[in-house]
Length: 477
Image (cartoon, rainbow, N blue to C red; front, side, top):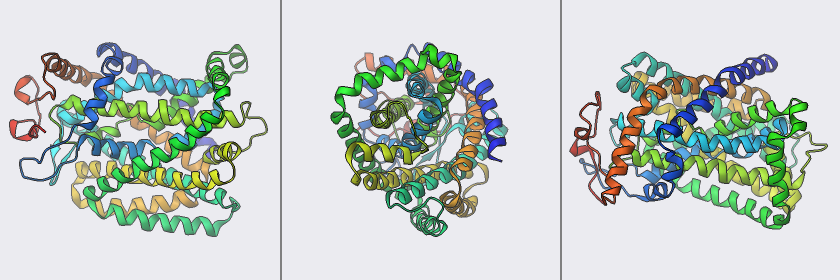
């Protein structure tokens, strides 16, 4: 089954998804006049803007709160296990192509999250939205939105959560020298993860935001501190490693051996799994934010792509290549390779420390992934579908904890490819609207407006916009 899944997925990625992702990313970059470059300083201002109480006196999700939900799903096993898998299968050059995908994909991330904000709807205590909503309201294609909602729920809430649980189990067992084929410890870890996940997912989005807001900074800082120590210790080797990454991405040796294609495929595939640019996931979190202009959240989510790949994934890649530049004699896969590299660089204590960090990374991703499922199940059948979703998520977490590495990743890769193709098919025709909103935002900033405001009467040609009346825009901070 693993071999059949791999063949199907490789063909889908090689001949369809990679060309589509790259070409559309370049198209969005040109169409937006390089939004990811020229608006980079503005991204930092956007992420720290606070939200005032809404018209009903509640406390809505802030830009930073929505950022942490999406970062919770982004910053996870893709940064640790995914980077290691990319290097193992595609060589050091795969890291370069991950960087390229982050730079190109930031434009896609901007467009999809801006559109999610524009076409969001009111929820009982916040907003909700995402690709399913901009397909329904922006394209008048409810059938497409329902298809996307079903696929993203299967992909994130089930398949990706299995990957997160699998990685937690593998690193915990490796940290404490438990044989990988021991069934009882993996069952115990799986049951513990189910219990912890249940405590949060039955608490609603407010508890979800509070948990991820607490966990994401802690996990990111802890992992970045470990990685920064490794880089400082090996700073004299950093130019060599960067040269190795770049040369392997274009080297004649790799071309002759057929390794160039593997480097590109693994770099793009793991880059997309890690930063999710164009995948249609982060817009679900971005739509929940209460902001004064849709572009604000587009900028925030574009920044998340850089944070995820250029910073966090690079730390992982450097750690691995410092420890074993040639990958000679290596038979480890996924997070255990990163774990071994940290032990080589820092000592045995680092293996246990990374297991704790990965637990926080992956567990927060489980929570973020669940939120994506919740938002889209509500789109499909309303809140009556949430009890069933919660049960299925708990089952997926347990199955991932006790399942095999190859199977859970193969299923995740296949589902991710299908999800991206559906989202990009909608994003292409709607992107013009996103960049008109960008022009409005930029015009206000040039006019001296510190915090630009959008109401739908500024663009009366837009149809089916559900909010963005004056009453829907939060008061100025």
